[in-house]
Amino acid sequence: MTDTSTESPLVSIVIATYAGDSLDHLGEAVESALLQTHRNLEVLVVADGPIPIETQTYLSERAQQDARIVLLSLPENRGPGAARNLAIARAKGEYIAILDADDRAFPLRIERQVEFMRESGADLVGSAYTIVNAQGDAIGQRKFPIEPQRIRAVMYLNNPIANSTVLARAEVLKKHAYPEAYRYGEDYALWIPLARAGYVLRNMPDALVEFRYNESIMARRRGTHHATTELTNKLHTIPLYAPYKWPVVAIAAFAIAAARLLPQTLLIPFYRLRRHLH
Image 1: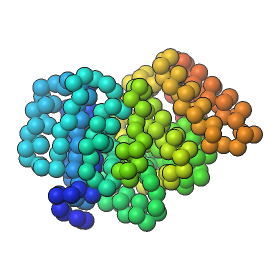
Image 2: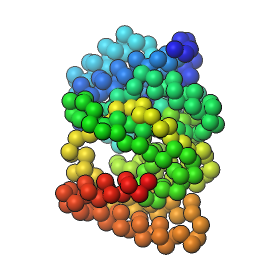
Image 3: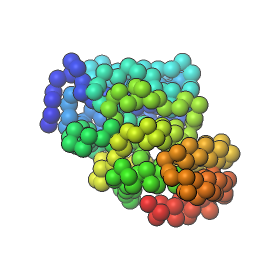
Image 4: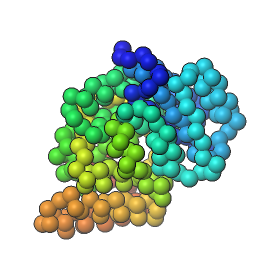
């Protein structure tokens, strides 16, 4: 274990939730944050608009039981970017960790990421994650590029850092906010300008988070809005590359964005193929 003082938390863990989140899954996310071996932290839970009374009751009771929980709320649903930005602005930690409301952090996650950040000099670090089904059973693992150069190299193809695994220096996220107009891809839209600004982005090879997967994920990633967001993000990666590569990046951007309009049965194999391009 590391520091135990809660007067000045070293790490602020941000969890954004909304009315559509499962209370069971949210509860597991919150408990996994509280059970970190690194104890010197705060857990900021943001309600993105009105949430069910059962969720309100759970969060209120847990906040009374554990002083490390800070409850925040937006009066209306404004999207995950706005909710996280509210928490980031209020965060007291030197580092800020992101955890999605349906995922779970392994107990050593924060301790290991803080140690890695200090040793590597990174500004933001993610990790691999274990994929679990709706019941919480492990069904696979997703890995990402580790070194900063490799992360930059593949950024035009896909999002190389999983949002729910991120730990960043607080000053970075306080200066560069999540785009609030995005309802999808807001994390990807943040990593790109960070890379363009020269921040050091890395991933740890070990899985430090359990990512909850269900079949509806692919359905939610289809449609015109998602295609437009995908295209915008990928075109914004162009300045990361030498001019000779710009046509390749542009062609890939339009092709990958168009795939968002495919039927779900075709989108799944497309995703699997693209991951092999890492």
